[in-house]
Length: 221
Image (cartoon, rainbow, N blue to C red; front, side, top):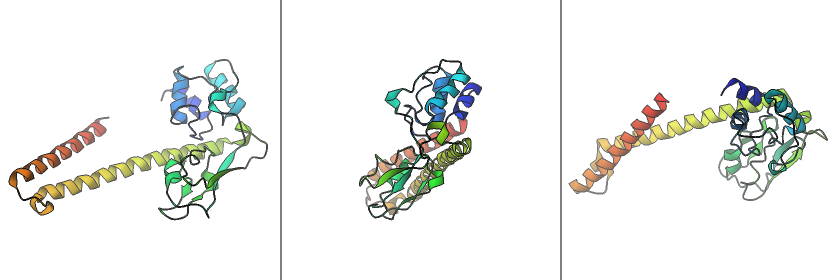
């Protein structure tokens, strides 16, 4: 991310709501910096957010793009725990890990970590999530503080690191399992035909080779 994109990103509320049409605030900042996106696509930032981006980019301020949504108050998600079925879909959707719970167990929202992004609502199969206004009549940046934005950014970055770590650990477990099977293929297979075992061995060796290639690519990238 170049310096202009960093300045733009710092002026965004970091809700990670994707209403701008980009996967996160950083991606939108980079698109604005490269003139691929307009400066009026962030409803959580509201009119004040457009003014901030205008000052940074030198582009004229304009009304929020209605296709992205409207400026509104700060909200937090609330889960009706009597209806929650513990599906974990909202946990997977939350960009700041603000929802806690386990499979088939009640979930709950940690209010200070919730950005009101609304991403948990459409994935809930039983519609047990609602939004509660917590900023009274204040909207946009009047309802949101730099401290809250920095906390949201920090939690989002931590979540991304956790996901990378979990994916790596998952791949390592699969690789270890494949190596174990390869070391004694006959005892890990219902087949006894040597030709069939050779084909299975070739498949496992090819999978391990792909795993090594991915590791080398990740290390080089």
